[in-house]
Length: 218
Image 1: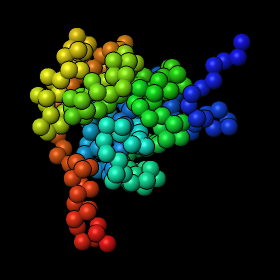
Image 2: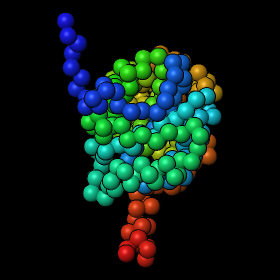
Image 3: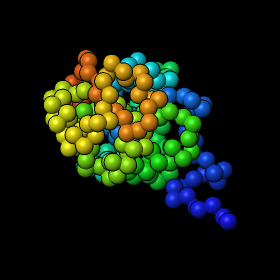
């Protein structure tokens, strides 16, 4: 019997180019538009690397968020280049493979990675603002069953996120942040909420500043 055809676009070799991995590695997946990438993204990544005991973090530069306006979205190549400059860290990899395989939703992206790397310990990382709207994501319950999740606190979102529909639905799967280093080894659903120094930087605000600055208006 022939194997079922993949619904993702793949290279003639059968593999899409991704950062290097090895069985047993603990890798944080941090997806977003990165439009533009900024020091706040780097801050979140450094916190996750330390608090979760991760080996690496992948910044997954998405083609566009289905829940957001893409009118001001820079090209993928531009966003990747800027993200690489901002990341500037030996354990942060920047990739835009979602566009290459034709994945539009996070649930599809994570499904692809789980199938390709069954022996890698992935952790999905997102800000508290995303947890507040997580119940609107396609297949959010499936995402929670697919891999552990780490929530990074953001200014103004602490209580909204903690009281959100998804947080309440997954309350029994939440672990204390003091045990966060064990998260990557846990069977999902499992998640934790990491508190600490928070960045007020926002891609939306940075785009506004670029539009209104003399240099950005040229």
